[in-house]
Image: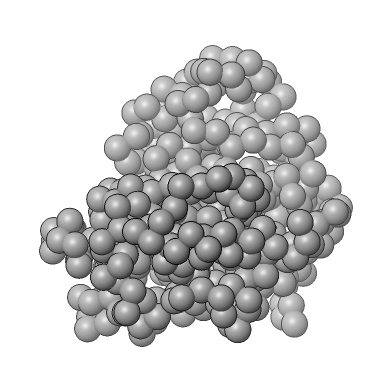
Length: 366
Ligand code: M6R
């Protein structure tokens, strides 16, 4: 039931404050001083001992994996590889019983992800699942795992499942870091608190969501779009571009902002919308200079900025504000305006937002 919403996608975007909360409910305990992930209790010693963690998924689930790479490396100090399931399954990956493989899938039925799971198992690796659909093949075939509690996701474009995946991965990274002693108690507390505050901040973005409609009006006739971000927000740029292309059929590319001058800058002209995820974090100055490079070539910049950022407002064509947060949890907020932008643009183009052409919700064939 779509309730008051025109499309399931819009409903699911709006459910995110609740679904993120559902995903950490009961897991962030004792005034958020402890993270309890029952499903991983027995395998944590193995995860702790792992020299390397391999994360596998497709599409949006792969993007969640990319964010986890930053989290696991920064806080748990373990090296991470993130792989497309469709590539991994046909490579000759070097894996052994020392490795931990985390498979991410909303449906738990994606053919490539399940094939990657079998391959990892056959090499003796510890296989873990992050999955939304209870009782799905992935959840049955993995040794252990954590469910995302996003509820049923109907829109083909994944939204609330993504933020639930990122929530789970953040909890795993922090818990692992705590167990390994690679995070200070202070940073741990700060991050858990920041995670717990996401639902409220997400609500603030959604309450202001109508503004994004006006931005969509300006750009819905574009044929190409570029999405840029750095650090934790590079995967968010990829995810924003995927959302736009899958539901509005506008060709969109996500790029690490620092890579722009190695190719995509050639595309910039006054017809190109460039969506830049530019909150005030450690990369801010660098991202601002990337924005200047785009502006100097007459590109149209839509910037996702930290609330109250006046400087960027003057420099770019359009801004969408998000509440201030710690960089490690910023993807959970920054992705929301990108989902809404894709939604409104697709709507203006008359596309079937919930069921885009040529796509299936769950890709159970190769
Ligand atoms: O069910 P899964 O998470 O395994 O699905 C993976 C991809 O097929 C999925 O994320 C796809 O890219 C979405 N349509 C993106 O919005």
